[in-house]
Image 1 (spheres, helix red, strand yellow):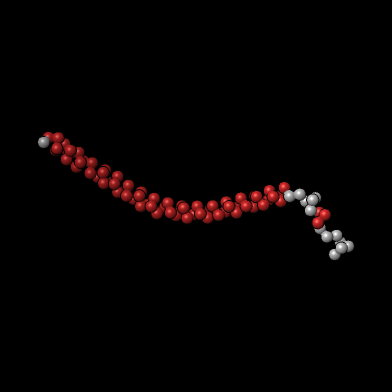
Image 2 (tube, rainbow, N blue to C red; image 1 turned 120 degrees about the vertical axis):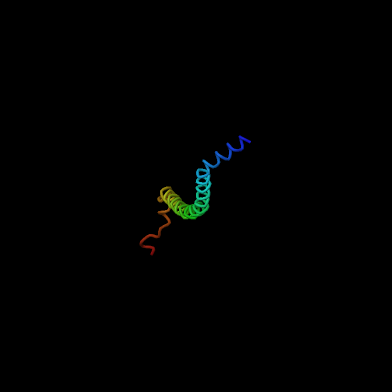
Length: 81
C-alpha cells in the first residue's frame, strides 16, 4: 500500500510535466499534419521548374552537338531563290 501512495505522490508532483509533454506532442502532430501537404504542394512546383531547366540544358547540349557543316548544303542558294 505504501508503494501505491508513492506512485500517487509522484504522479501528483509530475502531473504538470506530463500534461505539458502530451499537449506539445499533440500540437506538434497537428503542425506536421498541416505542414507536410503544404511542402509537398510546393515541391510539385519546384519539380516543374527543375524539369524545365533540365529540358533547356538538354536542348542546349543538342544544339552544341549538332553538325552545322553537314546541313549547310541543304540551304537554298541566293541565286536559286
